[in-house]
Length: 580
Image 1: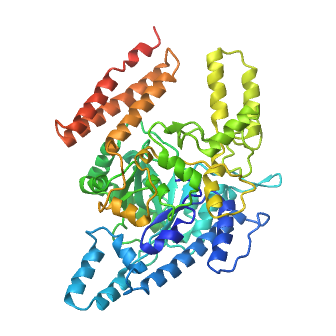
Image 2: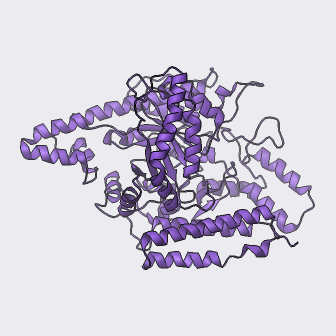
Image 3: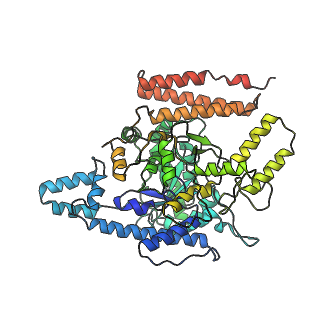
């Protein structure tokens, strides 16, 4: 959900048994939040200056240890409220699904003897949610001390990993945005990622993947280094918030089916590589493979969809993200941005080109960061100041990397464009692509500063936000209890009645994406490009056939799938081929 929205969510929900993820992109924001929560929870605070060695990793470790300490204290306090009516422990119980083993045991014990003893048993068997962290592997900027480039271990993603590895947390690092071999190799330098004598992994690895092949390649790579992937988190390429890593037309249902069919094989194959690597490193080799979860997320919006993924594909859990933007007791969202996303419909939520990474990015029209960007363009000063430099990746014009959203880069790029003699239409398109980039590494953290009334002189007040397309169907602020009730089918917080099934929504996004790719391609097309788009279209058609077999031969969903099939079959890519 971005950098700042869930930066302290574990403090708000972990004591209720709810797991969440903290982004480790912005150590400046992390240091401000550490100061804020230290004061709020009466903890000592000593600033970590950016002038000391390894300050980024040290800030991250200090913050994660603080969050862990606060969560432990809140969880201990929650368990002490056992028999009080309206207590926190009852809120914990109320947010569990009706078919919870914990609830069932409580009712069983309560029926056998007094409720007080049942509550005592419950308190002994509760557990807090996990405090997981996310590292976007592509954001691994090299750092300097003066003019001297520092060793690789001081680059951004490496330092973030070190900060997590040295923390007291017993949780997972979520690695997203693809494979980074150097970073994956660095994981092997920290003992917490290897099994203890009991076989326990103190720190675990979660990989976000878009398909089975990616999971197998990355899982084998890590296993050969003695590193076990405890969870493969399958994320819809286009039906999730944030950066959109579109597949080659492979849809969520067929992808999950492949994981279901190959789950045992994946685990056994990875286990062999893992055991061999552990033996070479003189670690204890567990007698059996550790837990390997398969989970899914992306566009889930109803309890029926949630349960269907578990029943049909056997996934261990289902992730929910964007709808929680309308639960302010869980996330940091300022009033203006909250109103923006609650009012947003399908046309407002769009796949943009604003990310400096050059990857499509889900955004919402009218966000204040885009308004700020347009004001600078109107003043003939396109581009943004670059105060944090987390996405400096271009060496097109400079020796040291700079960000494509920065004023410096856009000035140089527009200057280069003006020197070219190209068609006016092509010129305008290139011009618009350059100035579309926005400073999201700042904008995605600003809301946390605004909500908590923290110093935002460096960042300003403009906010970026990256809700998934599913946000169009959630339109009012709700409490945490109401949202969990919605997830488990106890009540419904969606007012609209025209929300499509998550599989249909994803298909519609992929069809639109294919059309955009065709429209943006040169005419005539290069043969390689044409074949790539043809493969994309064929994979979509194959996915539709899978859904038709899954859901039957008739009905409203089948009619929708048939409509998309007709639309895809009407696309004739041969007409774009280069004439011989």
